[in-house]
Length: 312
Image: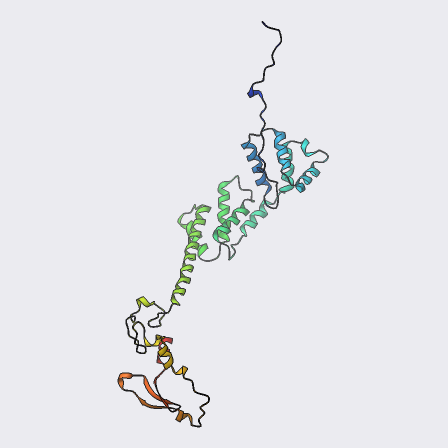
């Protein structure tokens, strides 16, 4: 039995207004020192599209809360006496465009781009990025073909004189309609080859400094030496020549290491102190018997011939 009282019905879920919450940190504060206004404006549009934000007032408020205090103050001054929250999103963007992106002379920007030069310490990739950045201010975004030609002209004109520029010109002789990216690739290939040659050159110098233990020459190592099986005439060991001998026996026989006793003073003349008594037989070439302080010493005669041969 009906009592005549109507029961309130809940509105359908689809009729409820959807509330969208922007995740914190999605839109960082705008910093003119780190980011261009045009780039920040694009990111604001992307965020609004992701979250399906189409309400003009909500978009405006998101933008206003993302501005730094200094930028917001400039905007507020420009709109006075009207408050920023009282105008549309488009009006806020229009005023910020004038404040943050003053109109520049396109002719001046193009002349500056054409005068760019590749610095000696800059790579091809770094130089090409600089060219792109400058040409982006020349007002050619709506004319892709003209922009590509401008990029190529600026890039080739400022390249280092020499192999880089010759390669770029040769690329356009081979293919008249070469694009900017094709020109960069050709020059970058030459840069890669040159860097590789420099690295190999340094490696060769290091290898050349290695001295062969067997013969003392610097153009090969021990395992390739033809004297690696030779017997040393000083120490009798196999594996090196006499001039490379490092044994203690050889050092003791070296004339440079002969020391006289300071306490044993003699008034003899130099001819009496140091005199050669005899030269050994042919089987012991380059060895002599010398008398030093009345003592007979068997010594190796150093003619200096080995040193002269090595210097040659």
